[in-house]
Image (cartoon, rainbow, N blue to C red; front, side, top):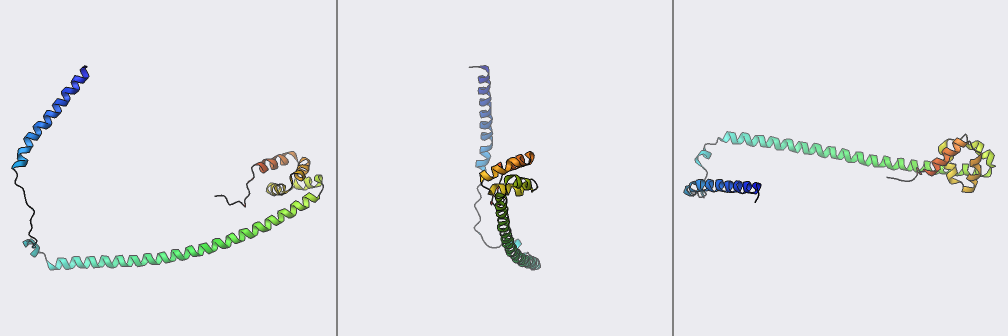
Length: 182
């Protein structure tokens, strides 16, 4: 056995001896103490008779006041809950009307884009490119997205190179705003 093992063994023996002696010292005092049986007498104690009835009435009145305050708070909370429910209903109606307006705008906007697509596809590529160079980038992207690929391919070469590159980049990363993404 190593030196550390012997030290641990001696330490363990000392700890056990300490607990053993503590038990022998405490055990006789525990065994000598008389056991108390629980009192089965349920009659009021003599000191209960000395309780003042005025104190009891005062405590009762305090409890009644607190109960009244709680009832008032409950009523206030119910009124606030009714107001919140009414506001929620109002907001739901407002949300529905806004959704309806947005949907109508999208339909109108899609109709306008389709009209532009039809107009630009009927033009010569060079003339369409000249006009598309002056369009807002987002509108140009929408128009190109709704065109057939071969027609868009004939217009892009006639556009300003920087704008054509930007539109192409936007087409690659395009996300439809009409998509309901979370």
